[in-house]
Length: 206
Image (tube, rainbow, N blue to C red; front, side, top):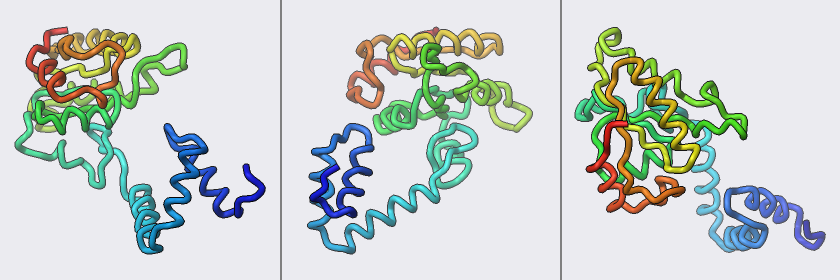
């Protein structure tokens, strides 16, 4: 903390520096940038942040961010209701959906199994996925015929896929995995659309 900065400026720098990937120098540049902007632009940004916080929640089906429940993807009648693509995070979902390679439903786990970090099956949306697979006729939705595991290729992503595959096969559903077009250790949100396309086209039973 700099004793020479006005308290309000120092408070803003401190808050910005807590954002992912932002150090104090970058936070300071952003704070100074905001100081130079018209008041209405800064107020607009503040309103947008409050709107996101107050209105965005999780879809009760896929657990992606949404402003209505169920979300627009889950309630879209044109999507294939018999296939679910399982991803780690909302960012992964957006990467796949924006590439236009998948027309089914999604399920966001909220992370991966990481025993050393204390993340077990109960910490993820695994039970919710299994319930979706089992729902079928009971809720008058088409039976799920395929679950595509699109977790990352990190060791944690692979172990999560193995665990899910075993649990899903117990329920008689076909389990597939993205093909090895994905680079090892890279998160889906950073993969280019051509590589994603290859992974979808050559996905295999898992």
